[in-house]
Length: 82
Image (tube, rainbow, N blue to C red):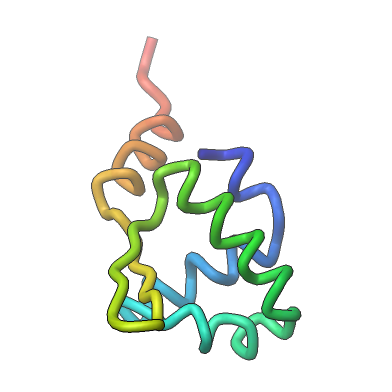
């Protein structure tokens, strides 16, 4: 999951999704200032990492963050007292 967030564009996509709850793939490209092909690549990597889920509605694909995966990221960053 951390590797998927190593790119600033993917962090921006995740931020967009968190702020809007879900976003159509067609709107993500303009939101991050990248081409549709580049955006599709970034979304594919986020999906492969299990950070986002999709919902197809006709020809459009909507993306949303999986909160349980963000909880896992947060837990991984917690420092446990020794």
